[in-house]
Image (tube, rainbow, N blue to C red; front, side, top):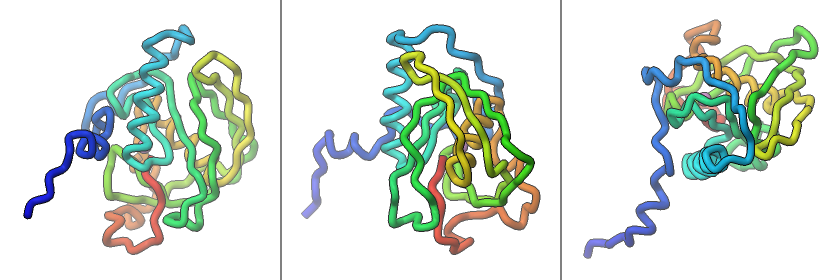
Length: 189
Ligand code: NI
């Protein structure tokens, strides 16, 4: 007997917005700042990004990944048994972000990207950063972050400048398919 899925069940498996993959021109562009908060356009963009990230089980998403070249990123990760080595990151909507490094210390770590599905690479990032920006209502955000939290922010903000993580890999031998690498796994962003 064939199991018939209801339409609503099928829709649940589909990301709300299509995620662009490496090679798409939008991913290489420098995105524009948001000029106005509390607009239906921005609210809909943020909602679509949240739904899309959650449908894809991502730890982060930048607007260019759904084809919108605006300086909007979202990120967040709850403690997840799938990623035992990854510290939780507060769920954040960050608009017009600015990153400052707090010292010169860099750290290598595995990254994955929803725009490069199934692959992982070791990327050097600043360990300690301060980041500033605004939430979707225009309230200022000013935080210090370290480790994985700092990594996610740097990865997402790179998307706003048209940079994908393979560009930052120093040793291309540490880049490949997650299925072949056999590492414990890191979420895609
Ligand atoms: Ni990414």
